Length: 469
Ligand code: GLU
Image 1 (cartoon, rainbow, N blue to C red):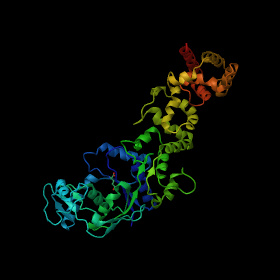
Image 2: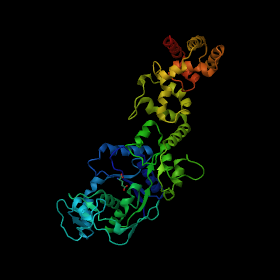
Image 3: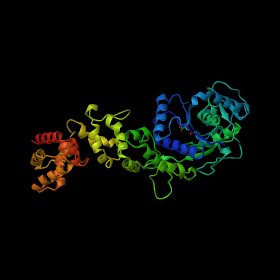
Image 4: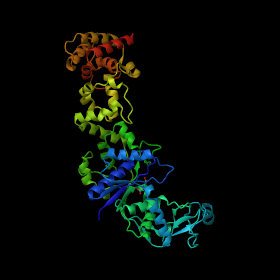
């Protein structure tokens, strides 16, 4: 039997990191089993679906490493409406489903509670189909439904506690629960790996598989991802969109490594590992069933390590979208023609060790491409002390006189200027740095001045001097 898994997102918003994790888990499982990964877009909730979200899903999957062409699909749930209706009709025909005209109020009045499920009033009334009549599944009165779950063992549900649930609405349209089962059946799915929130649906869905005469799949319900307060990550409260992480400059490799560590660890005392190691060692059966904490601080630290490990040419290439502002990434503060690729390449190795997100490249190098630095007023106030004006004058004069404009000479020159005033190098650097770059922190100063060049350095020192009057 060929293993066939599916990832079945609904195109209702940005792509959730929890979804990315489920997709990767399916992807790895298919790979390990020599199986097939199917992508199905569950687009039947017309009120909430938008076509652009589908494109967003496809490109987010591409980014994380599940590339178009490497999987079967995408299929669209909406194209299988005929199959969904046919299955509902079969269930009715075989007596496994019946029509019901009870209103919610009538059920509540009979059961005396709004929390009670359906009481089975129409079970044996033999109502024919009709406008406003829902189709309910007749759940067994006895026995239990045992779900085989790779992560959770064998969760067992007593059938008598499962209400006769609706499978098609009063207007005849099948509900999601049924559509999802029918699609899995149609697509020959053998393993359903999905979020824990669907676990309560699973006994109902398994009953549908059985009633339709097909062997149910093996299930795996992946634990929820939570924030530091142990609340389920929600798009209203937390940053959850994979696209947001991508646009901040998280590397796909770091992101997918981190996502796989939620509730699982590779062998040995290591966390940062090649994707091939994860593909080899990952075991769904070993995933911890309790909620997993999505720790952005840790992810950020991971990303910094991944950035530092890049060959410098790849780092330069990876920074490009932030330097040019392509796609959904905000444009940098300089004009395209002000950008100088050679100057960037010269400072890239210095920046590579200092940033944890690719977007942080911009404030580190903007001084190189802007006609005048963006002065951070707080940094200015902090760096410009009594005596700074004289120090800038002396540094300007000493720099002007230099024959060679290189980091080492610039450093020894400023060191000497500082020493004459009883200042250590750090103190002497501060006003120069803020005059030239606008900030108190950044890339190593003298290398920066070397790349910026004599003319621009001197004119910025003079401009700062004027500003100090
Ligand atoms: N479309 C459902 C969701 O996005 C997935 C259901 C499933 O995986 O079975 O939550």
